[in-house]
Every structure is written in structure tokens, then in C-alpha cells.
Image (cartoon, rainbow, N blue to C red):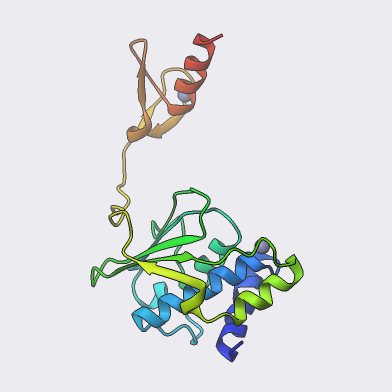
Length: 187
Ligand SMILES: [Zn+2]
Ligand SMILES: [Zn+2]
């Protein structure tokens, strides 16, 4: 494990709350991206804060590894630079909005038979070329978040983004009320 890997692991675990194999996968994915895109992860700032939030990540899982992506690269849900499309894969598609670069990084090793307590160290010690496979993403870069106006739900009277309002029985209702009304129909 290099000095940088160790430092990144420290940073990620401070954010994540514990040290684990999943987090190690995320740390290695960040290192792999940094190598391909020539990013500097060793300074104290996260790339997205210095690069004006241009790196976008679409994660194919919602597990521990995402916390490494968030803490090291600065891709976050609230800034529209992290999207979760959970299909249960340790895979991440990265997009650089500025240069139009993109890269999908997918774990290519199954650690199921590795004892849990050994996983983290083995993952961290595995070279990124043998740990992941690399390809073009299967998807296009997600669109920038739009700011929607709000509309009042005619059932619960709460405000909801217009984009989430549905029509039910002639009434404009929020997504949650729509679900409740639909469910009551099926009883
Ligand atoms: Zn964890
Ligand atoms: Zn409602």
C-alpha cells in the first residue's frame, strides 16, 4: 500500500465511520480514475472543489464504496454530481463535463471467498489494472439538475416540485399521495 492509498483510506474512513473492504474498493476506484485522468488526489482539497464540480459519478450500488467516492472526489448527491443507479455492481461511471471524458470502472474480482477481515488489505494491495475492468460507460452523462417551481398537492396540501406532481381522478397530487391513492384502489 502506498503512502497515498493509506492517506486516502484515512480520509474516506473518517467520513464513512469505519474501515471496511467496500470502502477500500471505492478508494481504489478513485485511484484508478486519478491515474487515467491525471488527477491529483494527494492535496488536501477534493478534485470537485478545485475543478468546479465537473466530475460526475453514476454509481451502480449504494454500498460502502460510494462514501470513498464522495469524500475523496467530492461527488455528492446534493450538488448533482453523484447519481445512484443501484444494480448491485461495484461499478462507477465517471464523466468530466468540461472535457467530455468518460470512464466506467467495474470491479473484476470476486472477494466472497476471502475472509472479511482480510479483504481490505488484499484489495488495497491489488494493482488497479487487475482489480477493475475499464470501459466506456453504458449511459450518457446525466443532465444538470433543473430547478423546478413548486405546486401544492390537492390532497395533502404540501408543496412539491412541479416535475413530481401527478394527475389522479382530475386532481393534481404529489407523488406520495398518488401512490397512496393507487394503493387504496388495489385493495
Ligand atoms: Zn463500510
Ligand atoms: Zn400530497
